[in-house]
Each structure stands twice: as C-alpha cells, then as structure tokens.
Image (cartoon, rainbow, N blue to C red):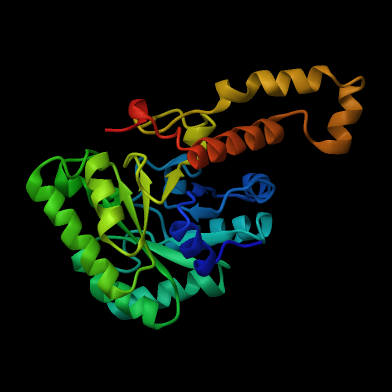
Length: 291
C-alpha cells in the first residue's frame, strides 16, 4: 500500500522511521517496488549518476520527467517525489507551479521537492495551494552549493544553526509537509525534529530525524566519482547471504530464469532491505556515517 501523507504523519507520531531512496529508472524502481521502502525520490542527482553530468546544474525538466515516468512504471505502488531541477522554480511562482504540475501530470509523482529556505517560501506556498504536496530541502543544497563554499557541513556554527531553524520555520509556515536536512550536525537535526511539526528527513544529518534518505547508487556502490561520508555501501553486508542462497540451488540457470534472483536484481533487493532494516532499528546512521 502506498505510504501517503496521512500514513507518513502517522508513522512519525508513532516514532516509526520513514525510509526512502533515490531512483531514476524502471529496472531499479521495479526492485524498490518489491521492498519495504516507503518513498522514492527521483532526484536531480540522476543527472550525475545516470546522465554523467559533473553536477546537478545542467539537469532539465524534460530529463527529470523522463526519469519520473520510468520510475512510476517500475514502482506503481510507491510514493514518488519529483525533484525540481535548477531553473524550474526560482524565477517566479507561475513557473514553479507550472513545472510542479508537470511532475504530477506527466511524471506521475505524488509530491515534489525543492531546495531553499525562506527565500523559497512564496514558491512553496504557490505550489501547495495548487494542491501539490511539497518537501523542502535545506542545509547543504547542491544546486546552490557553489555560492557557499562547495559541498560542506551546514549548521556547525551557532549562527548557521539559527539560520537553519529560521528557514525551516518559514518553510513549514508556507505549507511543506516535510523538510529534508542535508549534511547537518546531528544535534541541530534533532533540535529541528523536536521543535517543528513537519516530518524531518535526513541525509547526512544524523540518526535523530523522522526518516532517512540515501542515494541508491551510493548504497549499491555504483557511482565511481564520489561517495560522501554519510553514505553507506550495503553490498558487503549482504553478499554472504546472496552467495549462500545461490549455492543452495540445484539448477542455478533454471532458478535464474524462473525467479530472476541470481544476479544484480537480487543483490540490490537484499541491500535495500538491509538499509531499511538498519534505519528502522536505529543502527543507521551510526557515528561513522554522521558529522
């Protein structure tokens, strides 16, 4: 069953961790469909891991819609969030609503995510008033990271921590149902999770948020260029299980043809399930994956 807004809010109230991953294509989306993952983010990070761009800046709306369509076909029963790319919402409320509507009507998304805090309050308000749920994104914001010294931890100083809280409060007042904190100290993330009424997600924000996000290609060890400190590759944790299972099969060729569980699809499914398990039980992210 799709984890809609009410489901997610109930999970938060019960103290149950909400777990999501990025995804950009049909094949991996069909894997996520079979797991207990709660949400899928079709992130503009797909521009880097799927399309080979140096960063997320070049990603276009058409490319995002293309990826969203593929993910929706592969995961028809998951809550899918479309990531608004740079240039698709900053110019005006009109552009923001028009492009957010494309994610819903063309891409099949259930919600959108956009970067920025108080400066994007008007955009958030316009999109939510059009009937589209919005997730805010503050802390390290990759689309504008070059303006603030590149990829770095945000919120280490008292002034930055206060600025994060102010931005989060303004986003909440504008109508977001959730806020993603990226690369923020765990103490700051915990304060926001306790202070605000919105769902607080983290990616590199410590264990005290209401849910966790990772890049699928980091979880699977597929992206060759960079892996941030907070990202855990889960392949080593599940390979023994995979090898033991395949070793038990009398006819591995037949097993593979009948189940498709003899290769990368099964390895990915096991890795994702292990990630979900560790987030739910509270063992991820531990200190080694936090700032």
